[in-house]
Length: 126
Image (cartoon, rainbow, N blue to C red; front, side, top):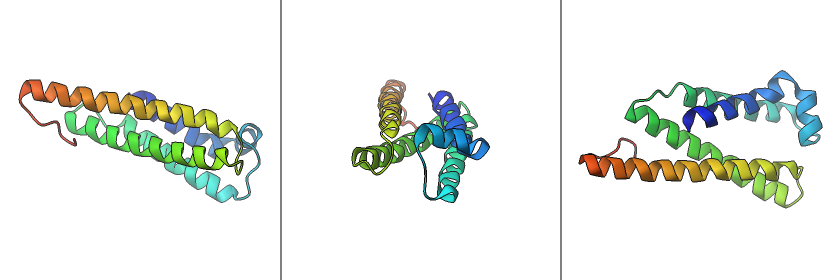
């Protein structure tokens, strides 16, 4: 899960940094190019951190917290601003993707807790 979302966040974060014109062609014109690039850079950094989190229990928990936080933030912004017409409706598609990541992380956390309970341990980061 961390690898998939990490790659998604890395690539979508890099997109406006690497080819701003195509990013705007798909997502609509933007007023503040610097802000788009800042959010893209933060998304890419978060994605990279998820990819590097490792497979240890602590690394998985950190990737889960980061992934859920990023997905919740992006989904909220997408739903509020695309829903009100302030930004392009294409962002509603991203909201669906982000809500999918949230559902996946919720299921992952639930499974980690069940596994830890069976093993008689507390899962780090939960």
